[in-house]
Every structure is written in C-alpha cells, then in structure tokens.
Length: 395
Image 1 (cartoon, one colour):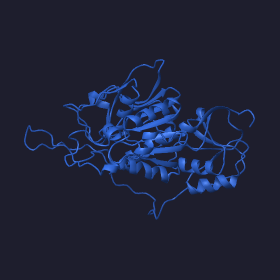
Image 2: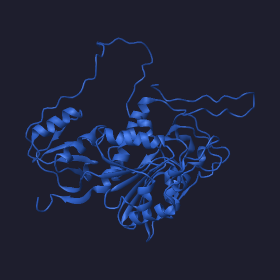
Image 3: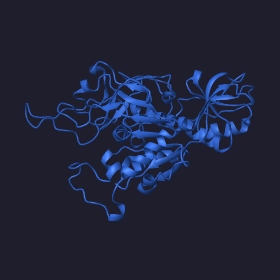
Image 4: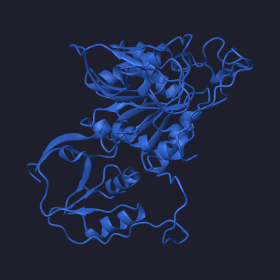
C-alpha cells in the first residue's frame, strides 16, 4: 500500500493471453495523495514515541502590514477560501507566487486565525502588500450534471464539492435540455460518463450486458436541444469542465480542435486503472499548487492530440505524457504505452467568450487522489475570477 505497484501478468497457460485484471492495478495511497514515503532498507533505532493522534499546526496570527498568504499546495485550501469568501473577505491568487492566496490586511487577524486552525493552515505574514498580476477570487457557482443513468463519478464529485464548501447545483436532464442554468452558474462540471449517456441516456450498444431501459419518465439524455443550449452557453462566456470520458462529448459537440487517439480501443493497449507520469505547465493557473512530479490516475481515459490554435479556438496544453513510453508508468500495469507518448492529458480551450477544460484522467477518483484535487478546484475558481494588477486602483 505504501510503494508503487507492478501488477503481475497472469496467463492461464504458457504463451496464453494475459488475464485482464478485475479492477485498478494501482492502489498506492501515498502516490494518490501526494505524500512522501521513505523506505527503510534495514532495521534502525530512533528516539520516537507512538502517534496517539493527528498533530495539526496551531497558528497564532498577529497583525501584518501586508496581509497574509496561504500555501497553494495545501489540500484544505479550498475549504478555507470558500469559508472566507462567504464571510465577505477579498481574496486574490498571486500569479508570481505560484497561485498563493493573498488575504489583505483588512481581514481581522482573529478571523484568519480561526479559519486557519479549522483547516490546518499556516498563514504567512507579509511586511507589505504584494504587487503584480493576480486573480481576484469570487465564490464560483457550480453546476454538476446528474444523468439519469446513475454515475458513481457524479456521486463522488458531489461529495467532494460539498465537503470543500462549494456552492453546488445538481442539474438533471430537463434543466440541461432547456438551458435553465444560464445566468445561475459560472461553471458546469460533466462527470466521467460516456457521450451516449449524456446525449441519449443509454450506454453504447453492447457496453452493458444486463442493460434494461429506465422507466419512461427517466429515459433519454440531454438530447440535441440540450447540446445546442450547452454550446450556446459556453460561447456566451460559460466554463465547462469535462472529466475523463465526458471530454469526448464536448470534442464532438463543439467541434474542438482535439482528437482522442484512444477512441474505439484497439489491440495491444491495456491501461487498467493506474498512475502515469506527465509533465506540467506550471505557469498555468490550472496547475497552481501541483507538484512537478505529480502523476495522474488513468482509467478508461482519453488521450488527446491537439491542433494549433486558430481564430476560432485558443488552446493550451496543461499536462502531457512523456515522449519515451518507458517513462510513463508510475504504478500499476501498462501495455501499449507508445500510444500515449507525447499526447496531451489536460487541455484548456477558449471557445467564443467561454472556456472548456478537458481532463483525460480522473483528478478526483473516488475521493482518493488528493494530489490532483486542486486541478479541479483551480478550474472552478478560474470560472468566476477576474484578472487584476495589484495594487488595484480604488482599493
């Protein structure tokens, strides 16, 4: 559980086919959660005592002429940010400090201390207010698509959004068809599900052997009407975040300059629930707080080939797989990794006045992959943030 896995390849007989694993082939919690583990190669002695419980920082926050900053890598940062925003605090993310959150000195130290203690943060005092490019934060209004064909990923995503204090609206098919969310949300999240379920409310033919239609009142997906409403909302300035397989739906709907090189499967490729190495564009606000060595969880995922930006679309690749397939695997079992080499794993696109974020992996897989949660949180905050130059005029 603490080290990378190399999943065994079992064959029913010599020279026979590899038996496919039942589920994921990676389950190393330190890798999923971004926790460093050092292996002791031999017994050792140390002055140590048993751990009786969690030991959290107990910050004492005093007046600071320049306010305070909060670590962008902290797992509990969104919960603290959402709490402070709900109390009316002005908050900023500093571009030149890797997305650190700046809390201006007007916020009472007692408020900062209380929030920091609840969420186990250590505010860093500043001698003077920061200057330079920043994002002024606002609480994003999040819509989460809830298909009638039950989605485990939707449930896990909703669990995390509620746990971290995001303002959330569940959107079922009728609301999606009529575009009733326009003006009520800043960002729409499509959970990991197939394009056929989003569009038609049923899986692809042959996907589920025991599939039976739902009752008439729960049949169908968002249909052509919902697709047109979604495309119009994005082009008018909305942000849509697609998790894993739902990216394929947006690629088709919006005619994005992106292609999933794995669509349709293919012989010789096997990538059953494992951790893969990527390189990050650390300057992108989507990657703020993410360590440069953070891998991603790949499970029935797409891999993107993109075209250069043009007049219709802006494009930025945030995460990309290595050029050498031998560098891909971090934990699990991989076959046919050459199909992933140099492909994009996370892409941001400008579509009209709006933004599309395509995840080719599961950043919040079953609420376990803490190391990549912040990629999703960053996408949500970007949808409601305004770029500014500090110090702000009139402030």
